[in-house]
Length: 96
Image (cartoon, rainbow, N blue to C red):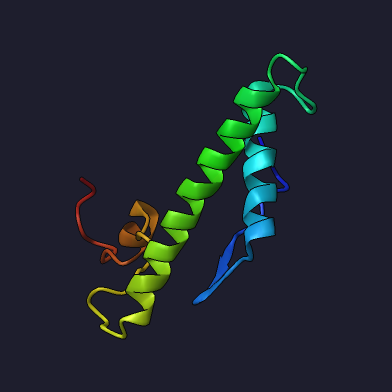
């Protein structure tokens, strides 16, 4: 759907606020189908951008907080796919 979506976090480094705002604006444009809102919709459009930017910032701060703790158990790690689990299964194991 959106091939131009860029990650806003690389390791512990979080994107600056202007990049987060731009990503939020891109998201609102996509879901509303408006590249430029009309005058009637401008307030709702900008409120949605602000809400999504704030939620994104909270999510990124929470991830960075867990990474900065240095505790290996609480560090964020990507979820393993079922495919990765299947690749670890012995060849003669039954398929479930």
